[in-house]
Length: 315
Image (spheres, rainbow, N blue to C red):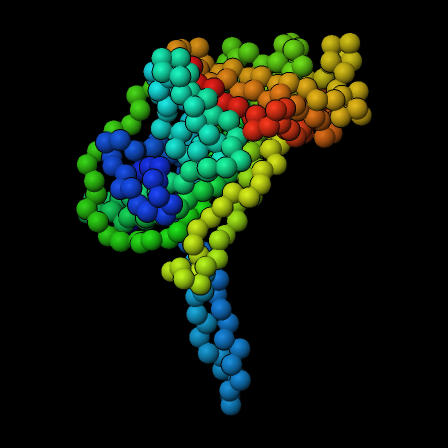
């Protein structure tokens, strides 16, 4: 028997695409939530003409693995030191730039995308042994959710090459980051320099398109995965206000480009600042929150100078 919560995840950046860098419990353990490992493949129907109507067995063609999970959005605890979630962000198309003792910046990149190897240990309750899933060459997409009074989360959908699923001895106790994730409270939130909007949540999806690289030489018919494009979008839900306070309608009609900023956390080494320089509103829908009139506002993000439409800075 396997318990749904009793799992260990390790993630490590690859030096060479698809080559397992052997993540360890001491350096690469990730505190992940709701981990799901899904094996997928193309079932090839034979379609052979026979004397009888009985079909021939199908065979498996291209095969890959998808891993979905979420992580608390938090820093390493030391300003200028990258958090472990950084490997995953880079495998979702972000670049990483560290200023020692000061900050770590993640900005969208158009070239040089990293990849990661993922280990997931399912721990059997009766024996304490594990079933190990090994996925290499993983790249994917990430979305972020910021809700009032709740820990901010990053939700990942990673696609990679399915290497093995084997029975192994459960590794030693993993070493996790010791920082506690900040709660979304007392957060500085501004849109077009207006800092008085009362929103319960902000969500942002990087919107990566991840494509398969098909290769007749590769095992399973796949060489790997490539991030081909991104269309970042999101939404937030402020309480309704007079146009004098904020004129959402005019912004929508004129496709006005507005800057968004959100700061979560207050302890050095564990502060995350989210910036988006050119947000445009896609619509305005009436809603209700605890009897209070609110607006549901979807938006999309665009770059200003390029590769800057969504920047995360840990300080």
